[in-house]
Length: 400
Ligand code: DP6
Image (cartoon, rainbow, N blue to C red):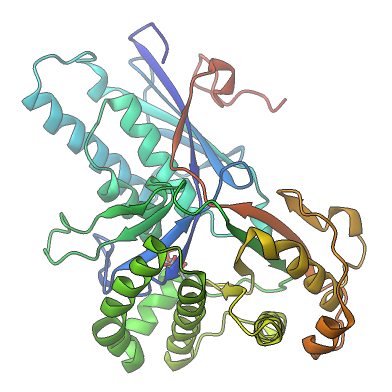
């Protein structure tokens, strides 16, 4: 933080998360309260992260925000909701804490700049990392120490789960004001070191229905969604928590796939129906089941969000063979050397038995690339002032 108290600058990073028990449907659109609890795995920021700088100054005349280098409308309702919430929490703290180190800062306007280290075109959900990072950075500059679930959640529901590392439950809560709808860590990022995630980025031509709109239509029209929220998810949250605590990959993997499938079934049960999966997604599903059947156990598991990209969970001893299976079934078309990003994966040869077991003709070029990553920590503060995305004048630094 800058020493001059008329200007405070903080830069933070935050991770993306992948739900293994999905959030789909709100009971309150304004407060972003879900119809069921959800559970996710936080992915490592070495591969995927959002970086956000927040600067407050008495000299700023208005709030401003830049996303990936472009000025955006700070008046967007979800950004406004986050700003309002953080200032409310800051005021609340000031009124109960006499030892206020920054008495004036509450009235200061804020400038925010945020960038992702992964291409938006990859179709990876960036809103969770983005709003978690925004909440975290704002909390630092305004001196808020309160639980930030409420702030991040008002940006995007799934964002509250990106406030923690490891394995995280977003408890749906019961109260109408949402005070008990909060994210809690189930196990830390150190709990299951062998767990790996592979993101298979699938070429997709058209933009799918946004999560926000899709889940609204599902809540209005899908009886299966209601059944899922009431009769299926509560037991699944307990079961998944147990599998994680016991590091039981068989249980974890199977339930992850079942819950992804049920979420996509509720999308099909929505009227008019929504399909996020495409032919490539379905081929990946088939590949995973053939691979597991060949091995006689659940060695890999898929999960899909509101788009065709797959996230594969597996253990470190299976990564090389499964990546070889993906390369065999979906040969890279042009960028063979850039097909694999992230954690190093040693090359592996696929046995003829595995090739035969995969039971499909190779389809070249339909998977753009793979990002290999693992479970990671929650938001971080960057101490290096060089990391700030905004200069001392509060404007974006020219890109290096
Ligand atoms: C399919 O959090 O993006 O990824 O709350 O409207 O911003 P809003 O929706 P969002 O929905 C995420 C849905 C999901 C499942 C999940 O992450 O749990």
